[in-house]
Length: 349
Image (cartoon, rainbow, N blue to C red):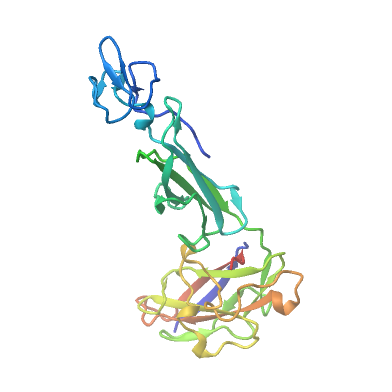
């Protein structure tokens, strides 16, 4: 015979321009610029041509020194050897919504040589503070200069999490620039205010004595009620923890228990057939799941703000626990405390 105690814990919840070029000065002509297309100019030592492909005494190869690369026989515009600069920008560092507008641009102009051939395409990557330094490709060699990030693609945006973006550009001469400085935005929705109370005014559900490989559902005298007291619609999220001797799992097993949750407006316990894969509560904050039309019953999502009538801004929470099929701890009784955490977010769909 195993005795289980359930406790519900409530916790409310630009572009940077900088020099480039490898440390050498690029010289495109040993003579002053000028002349006509296809024409030839002569010096005391070299013959220079004004267009690519017209052979000359100097030829088309470069001559390198310790501090200079000399390109004879080319006009400046025939050689774009400097990589471009690119950067990203998010208009706001704090976003109330889970969708971010991100834009980026590039410049193919350098302080050494002036304008190049122009920008071509961009690579865009994203990262987040919970996984620092791990950059993910978002766009590769794209012609786009802006896009929307979130709420579910290319990543599910989470509350109070900062997302970072960086860009590098390619110019028309196919020079590839360095990654630009990152820009960042934090998803921080408007504050939510809600209360959770038990039907008996308590926040603890104490089950009757429960056998191994048995199950129990919260009673009509113990279910919990969530009430939205804030100005925005909210979705309720839930997760739980391992107990002292049991692990939380999708299905009960050896020293493993499972927990299910349903939100609805009913004042009687859900039918036993309603506890399914879509009502399973996961373990730990990284696995928090929010109520949707297809998860945790018929309620718990789009709970109306404080100004709505009571039935629209309240939802009842029902819990269903399945005990381990086998336990390795021997003895007459085993007291286990199951901790459950609720969080709310402003509705994002």
